[in-house]
Image 1 (cartoon, each protein chain N blue to C red):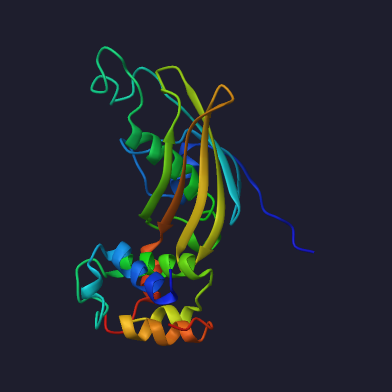
Image 2: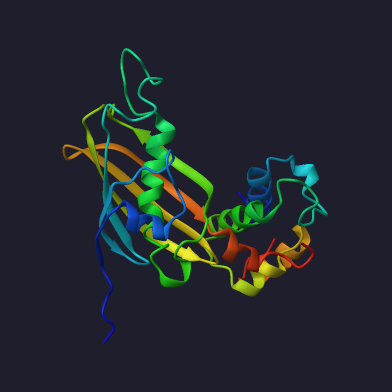
Length: 78
Length: 159
C-alpha cells in the first residue's frame, strides 16, 4: 500500500466514506468528522504511519489537503 | 528521585470521586491498586441480585457482553482519571477493539480485572484490559477512550 493509499484509508475507515469524498474534505464538513471523529482520525494516521503527531499539528489538521502538508514534516511523502 | 504514587484499596465511594459512572451503570467494587498514568487492578462481584440477570436470561443468568465491556472500561478509566488534573472528568469511547468473551460470567463470580495504559496524549487514552474468573481469562479488549474536556482543546480552529 502506498503512503497515499494509507492516508486515504485513514479517512475512509474513520469516517466511513468513499475514496471520492476525501478530496477537499474539511473538519466538520461531514457529521462523522466531529471532535470525536477528529481524534479517531489522528489515531488512525498515527497507527498507519507509525508516528506521534505534535499538539500543534493535531490542531492544524483541518482538511484532507492540510493533513498531507503536515505529514510531510514527518518525512511522509505522497 | 521521583516516587511513584500508588493508590490502594479504593472502595466504590472513593472510585466515584474519580469517575462519573453511577448505578445502574457502575460496575467496579474495588480498585485494589492504581498507578496513575500506568495501570489499575480491581474487581467486580456479580450477585444474583444484579438488575440485569432477570432479563439476561431468566433460565440461564449470565453477564451481558456490553456490561463486561463497561466493567473492564471502568477499571481502565482508573489508569488515567487518577492523574490529578483528570480526576472526576467525563469520558467517552473512541473505540473498542479485539473484544473477546471466553467464559460465561454467572451469578457468584468475581471478575478480577487488570488494565494497562499504553498511551495518554491530548485527552486520548489507549490501553488493554483483561478480566479473570478463578485465575482464567474470561474477557479482554483494547480501548481508546477520550476525555472530551481535554480533547476539544486540540480541535481545528474552524470548529
